Length: 377
Image 1 (spheres, rainbow, N blue to C red):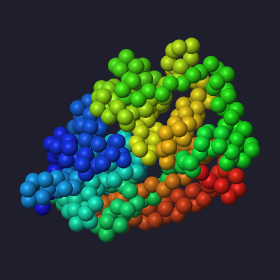
Image 2: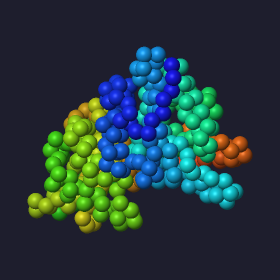
Image 3: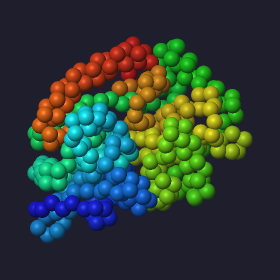
Image 4: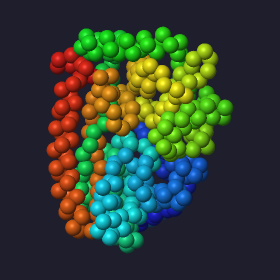
């Protein structure tokens, strides 16, 4: 067995990589990662240099793999370490470049070790920690790993960091009304009022899969989500070319919910779909409409999950406003190794205190659940 580290996902055979990645997480697929690189969304200029790591056997067959990037900044990660970088800067120590294992711009829990063999997991960890030490990277960060991967990370000396998102769970609802019946009366009325407000504005919705999305429609959708990004002072992380490519190469994993008024597109939500989970990613609108964000990004997605039998809906990061709409706290994790021993120790103390705050926060949020006493989705 030997480890190999590449500068592009395309140095790995697509079939070999996907055989390890499986189909559960579309954003771990070779097609997704390759589109990110080919479109220029990922690369040296973007501050995301691929350093994907694989383990090959004596016959040269890929038996384990791990997405990995050299980062020159902390944008697009959604596990925030800006304060750590500032502390390094104040101490006169370089924090960048660093190594990050994640799916770019995708804050969703998924496998980081594309193998079920514990020995190969250990080989992958040895390879990436060895790379960090040899090349003088300040740190290694494994973002949004699956819970089953945490013991391997802890055993290898990485510190765990706990956080939470807000997810919706499907309890086998027959329709949206049955889901709403689990709410308290006041919360149920609020959701119905929001949905009614959207309908009264004459707004209608279309669901489009990748196969339905041509260049003209993607241009409209991209303009809409760009408007929202620009309001926040940036452009979308992924380019228009990226979305066009993945809708062609992964058509069954793309879902666009398009809001229209008088036949014109006014808002859109871009989501990734899998057999079990719907992932909300990007949203945009040409103006502000009463309750439209909640309908497009949340209620339409819940409708879709109920109709298609999806078990979960993960609409993205942050947003306590999701709780009143049926999304409850779900734990997420990251793991961190820092080369500098004093910073490693200090940040370890910080993470232990932070975890207590996260647990208190989750308890406080759950106390405001919209579900009837004793009921959760």
